[in-house]
Image 1 (cartoon, rainbow, N blue to C red):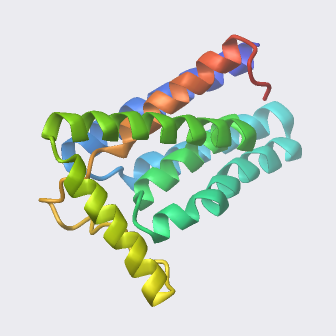
Image 2: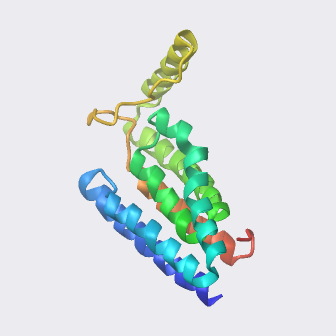
Length: 180
């Protein structure tokens, strides 16, 4: 239980640093994500040796494999993908997947709130329908949005959703709803 508390603290520090980086520069710095991948891997190796290394590697690789489609579509950025992988390096693949699912739920809630606040629901729906049509007609998976377009009204800092989803995953773990 002490090790889990230690890993929770490491993950919370990771999330705070990633949030600050993303809110300041619209990027999650590689030094943060890769640094915490190393910290998580080192902690797990210290705790369990070679099986700890495998635990961390699975936590890094599985989120990449599962979420790569969203990155290709440009629905999430590379920093978001690396952030979830850094969480996985510390907490393991199962936790990272659960945190990612919770993050997408929070992302949907945030997006709905932004749409309600901006009163641009019809505009966003038209954009989405056009995107689906374009993918079908071209028979390709296209980029959903251009991250370089600073005026894009559909953008928000997904690190907020990742932090919220990870905290929700911790709450579920501490309540006994998920097992690591």
